[in-house]
Image (tube, rainbow, N blue to C red):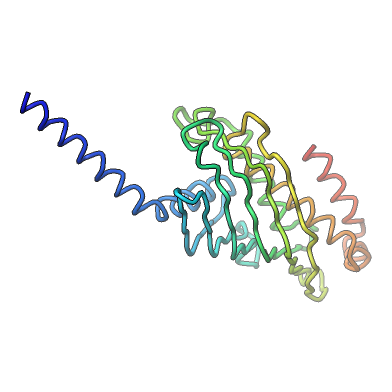
Amino acid sequence: MKKALIVIAVIVVLVVVALVFLFSNLNSLVAGAIEKHGSEVTQTGVNVSGVDISIREGSGTIKGLTIESPEGFEARTAFSLEDITLDIDINSLREEPIVIDEIRIQAPIVSAEITKTGASNIDEIRKNVQVYSSGPKEKGDESSGQAKRIRIKQFVFEKGSIEVDPSALGLEERTIPMPEIRLNDVGGAKGAPPDEIAKIIIAAVARNVASEIADSELQGLIKDKLGGSIKDKAEGLLDKLK
């Protein structure tokens, strides 16, 4: 009996040590997961400068999240998301789907580079996400159906700006204010795998970036340079995303 109690005590201690290790390293684990899986989904570099997650309070912040431009573009960074706040339903962490009540991204900067052919780094990232999410997954891959499903009740992308660089077309760089993007119930009641969530959000942002550029004064200028309407390109993109 004494030996059994000793074994149980040792197991309890190991569990406590494991939990302490997990929660003391939770922020670095989350940051590492964002960088690793974000890079796989977008097929370009994803970096985070800081993460602060509080399971007890069901809240968190992510600082300095950047998504680099794909190869072939001069702009080093396509997205700069300096301030991301999370409101997590802690009661859902042991269930499926995991429910995030709100993700709010404040003052994001989208750096849209337009090439001589009318291609853009933002649309290339959108295509990369589309290819990744529709491609075959390795057995046991976290992005497969075995991954935890996620439901985001509200996603808000606010007070953003689009820094457009059409210099390849001989046009001046300019900044366009970006209206708020608000998505409700991303993933639906049953939730969706992380890569599907990423595809929905990045597609929505890419669509809005294309539409804002199309509706700006750049429309006419780019039309003259390309011999076609970027608005038509944006509408074609919308049809594909549907």
